[in-house]
Amino acid sequence: MNLPKIPIDRWTDQGVEFLQVNFSDAFNGFTIVMRTLIHGLQDALFFVPPWLMILLFVGLAWYICSYKMGIFTFLGFGLIWNLGLWQASMQTLSMVLTAVFICILAGIPLGILAAKNRVAHRIIMPVLDFMQTLPAFVYLLPAVSFFHLGVVPAVIATLIFAVAPIIRLTALSINQVPEELVELGDSFGSTFMQKLLKIELPLARRTIMTGVNQCIMLALSMVVIAAMIGARGLGGEVWRSIQRMEIGKGFEAGLAIVVIAIFLDRLTQSLTHDNNKN
Image 1 (cartoon, helix red, strand yellow):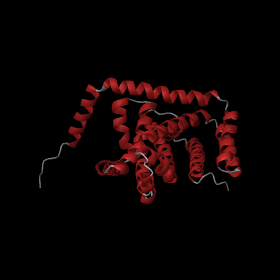
Image 2: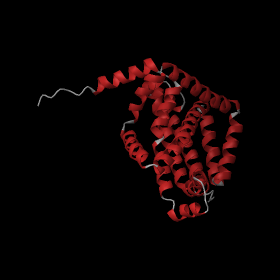
Image 3: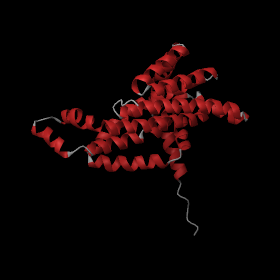
Image 4: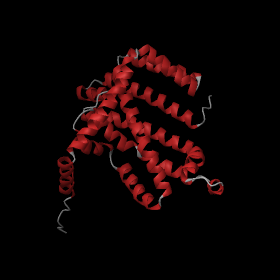
């Protein structure tokens, strides 16, 4: 059959052009705020000497996780410093932390809304399904269209890609709170916010932290991919190694990414399980 093509591409281009023309000031203002936040965090990480930052990371890992994780942190970040990838690693870490912070601020309220409102649940969940099935590279296109090249579109694409687990697991955890406890709060005359803050969220904390853990891992993977649109950091090192066929340099950057991923993963897992040290 010779059916006419549905012009989804043209409709999409027209929508993007409409937003660019009518909301350019809003996008520019948001870009300035995001750039200030990201660069401020980067400057803070760069200000502390690498040896002192490593000791801080070691102390954090030792206190939250275990002495074994503290030893790994010392060796891992010491290796990153030795390989000359400290600055790139701190750039990557700052982008991941910024994206995850915004994901938490937006994701937990949306998850609570999805759990409490049936209409919102029917709208939010299909959107999350759509977001999680899109290839990661697709998120780079609108980010570049609205925020140009650089670190800001990289973080925007990262937080959109990584926010779904927090929303989904927050909604799931709130729905799994025993109804008897909620009814008990009602019997004592608790308000909506009192029940949410004193009953539901404390009981849902573990599942929510699992969502934060998944968000961090997705954000780290997306930040590496975002090197294609001008984000620096370890992703930039990997991308440069691909272009120049420098396999050794790419492997070193990959090792640094693995160290950061394990460090962040173990920290959030330990927070999820009430600081149970091995």
